[in-house]
Image (tube, rainbow, N blue to C red; front, side, top):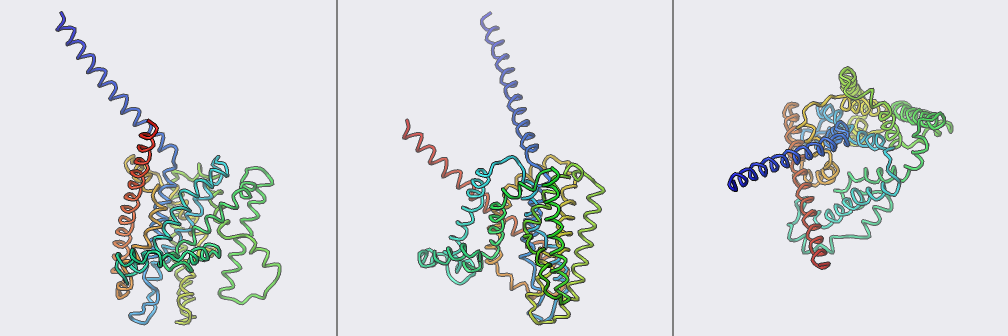
Length: 411
């Protein structure tokens, strides 16, 4: 009898264990589903693609091929399609502009997730710049760390809003200053981002004024327009704020956009068409100017304040957001990657500088350039991702170490 009771107890224990295991699995599944519902997967996909576009823009070879002393039009075409990474990031900011967080929490998040990592990046670049650009060894940089760390230059660059003063490897950090500017303006933006009559009217007027300003600026690139005081009124609208407000407009209509196959195809075609138009315009623009100020001329296609960039950026945002994602595995991967795009954005520039892309300027044929971009983009993204994940793991280990010490001290 006792043996039977013991056997029954073991069976019951096995049932309970199996039940607990199933319950744990269900809880884990529910938690994962809750996280997926909490995050907008398509926005994470936009983050990843925007990050890839930024890396691609930095990887693109120079339109003026100095090795052959001629303009390489195929490179201009490539650059056209990598021009909208920053506009996508700005529109994402607008997409989540009204998300229920108070202003204090926004600043706290910005400080710990953006400003502190950026400051660490700047310090690292100052110390190890000569190693990154292949002029000195890593050990030499460590030995001369204090002399390399030029704090007055760092402060001057931050105060004057010119990151190039700090270091050439900080050139891409202009976006951080733009982001901070947007965060400062958020209380004002909240006033116009309401679906009430007057705020809506004010927001639409700002958008119209901003677009008109871009049109006038674009015309002035080709035609001399007399300076009229009234025209300057349109310049009052900050172009980065314009993208943020466009992002909010997309948020308002997100239910109509999401998982809309027809809209995905149409907006995708618009994106491709606009970029070919941008490419054709730029060909004419660069031929006129020939080799005079060629560097300034090629910036036309990648500059985010043109009307074509606005249309292209909005079309790409809609195309990605309306794309229907069905695979749960793919969703999980996108969420995981989307959480690391800022770190990748910070670090990728160092890897590109370390490799020294000038050696690839000898590439002449279009299909070789495409292979170079595809391979370079993939390797830079993966390498940056590995570094970001490693740094996060190190951070977690250090924090856990401090928590254990605190627990030991308390006990």
